Amino acid sequence: MARLRAGGWRRWGWALAGGVGLATMGLGLRALGVGYPLEGMYGRLTFWLGVPAVFNLVHEVFGYGSLAKNLAGLGTLGLWLLGHAALFFLYPRAPGVAVGLAALGYGYFGGWGAMVGLTPAFWVWARWGMARAVRFDPSRRSSLKEIALLPAWLAWGQRARGEERVVFERIPGLSREVTPQAELYYVSKNLAVFDPDLRGRPYRLEVGGLVERPLRLTLEELRALPAVEFVHALICISNPVGGELVGSPRWRGVLLRTLLERAGVRPKARWVVFESRPDGYVESLPLDELPAEAMVAYAIDGEDLERRHGYPTRVLIPGRYGMKQPKWLTHIWLSDTEAVGFWARRGWSRTAVVRTMSRIDVPADGAILGVGEEVVIAGIAFAGGRPLERVEVSTDGGRTWGPAVLKPPLGPYAWQLWALPWVPRTAGAHELVVRAVEVGGRVQDPTPRRPLPDGATGYHRVRVRVR
Ligand SMILES: Nc1nc2c(c(=O)[nH]1)N[C@H]1C(S)=C(S)[C@@H](COP(=O)(O)O)O[C@H]1N2
Ligand SMILES: [Mo]
Image (cartoon, rainbow, N blue to C red; front, top):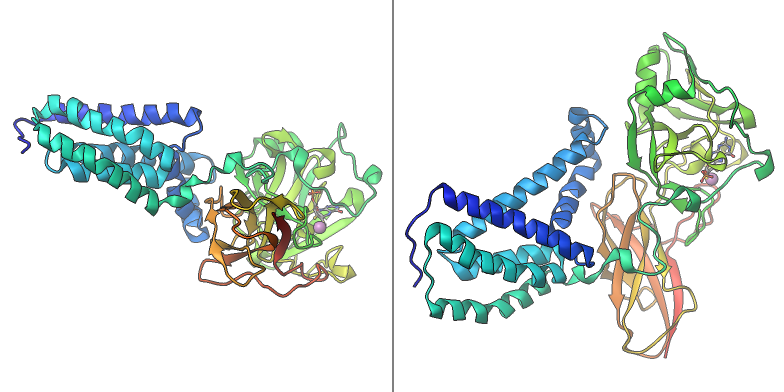
């Protein structure tokens, strides 16, 4: 039986050292491609911070900068250290339970590799490191018992977290979680050569109409205003099911709210109108439907917008299709009437609310797979800012469905990566199908519809041959 003799502040010192040591060791393993439990904890924490209601609350309190994010990072580290202190203190009393919980935690947050890599280190530290602090004197029999129990814990923890086998960074052919500017799709009503080219020209963004103080801002003045940055998916209303007209870049700009506050919206104003004079493109949105995150963007990944993506500025209205988001923005008007948009006048949706979509990136349509050989089915999903509960995949044309591993989103309006390892068991043709399910259980609309007028619906299907 284990005996316990001393305690005090030395225990805290050793526990802290153990927590820091394991965090550092995990970083080393991460460099080798092993999942980092701290990253997993942060992901889970920020998933809930990313749900719109919580996101809005957090950002009301902390603002839109990186503060909330950094606080979440600090909170994660705090939880990690406290959790380890608790486990180290538990160890002398119930060694098997402490090791088991540690293994479960590493497995749950970091996956199989982290569990196998970190659990023995925890054990060694708990046994010999903490033993120095508390003069814990384990008997040889208890050691043997723990060593014998370890595989059982590992296996159990792994069962609980089997899905962590998916490493999203290593799936060839899967979209990147954050779309670089060079890979963002391009759509314009203009011939590309006639797209506005505002580079090297004097530029002013005017905010006028029903406001107290009209603004005329240079690009420098705009850049000097409080900036926000977040990952936000952009999708064209004409994107067909399975299409490529969608991306999820990291945008930087000024919240529309900031501009409207400076200009002072008059009570009579009902609509906000966005206009690109250089190419004659107009859109509008009811003021009371303007999402808090709507912004005037001027950069992607810290780089100026390219000409084709709207240099120097464009509007971003989360949750609406691309057509509602003018590039080469020159004027923002407040108005008491709607300005029917360029595409809306041609029969496309007036509200342009994004429909829930999902896409299979890999395997490709027509791929040839081997019986008994594992492949990863993976892709993207986006519900226009409505949080996703899960993504389901069928390998039999939609008869049966199973849940994929869904990566937590990088923000409330970012797309999400999903993946499902699959071992085909029978030769022949297989149809892979994907569908997204929103929080609350609302399943993606299965009815095949063309993009016009409200955006495409229906499930993306990919046919593969197994032999
Ligand atoms: N001024 C202007 N803005 C515009 C358009 C346009 O033709 N002119 N096209 C819209 C459409 S239909 C889409 S889908 C997005 C595409 O933005 P991207 O080319 O940067 O991906 O821009 C929108 N903004
Ligand atoms: Mo579009």
